[in-house]
Structures are given as structure tokens and as C-alpha cells.
Length: 74
Image (cartoon, rainbow, N blue to C red; front, side):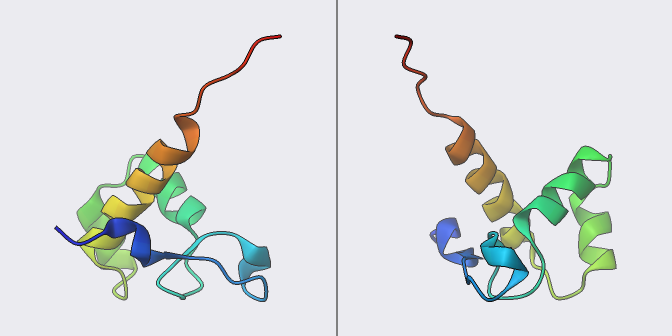
């Protein structure tokens, strides 16, 4: 299985430095918002033909990794 994290790119000169998919101007948050609104992966792929199913998986993996951190209580 391909390393999905390589599909998520960061460029300070693009989309305000927010994480994007493969250097395109499609932000990870855009894909996550569409999924959260109830769109299926296939519907997103139909709306954004430049995306691949692995891109959607990478967005989910990115989100999961970035919210799974311990909180240190003082």
C-alpha cells in the first residue's frame, strides 16, 4: 500500500500554507467538509475528477493522525 501521507503537500505560497492534495489547490479540509456533509467518496470523485480514491483515504488518515495526540494535564 502506498504511503498515503505523501499525497498531502504543504506550500506556504498556496492556499495559505494549508495542507493540500498532491500540490493541487484542493485542501484536505475541503474533502473532509464534503465527507462530513454526507457526500460519498464516489460523489466527491465525480465532482472533482482530478482526485483519486487514495487522495480521499490520505485526507482521512491525515485527519486521524492530527487529532490523535495526548493531552497533558497540569
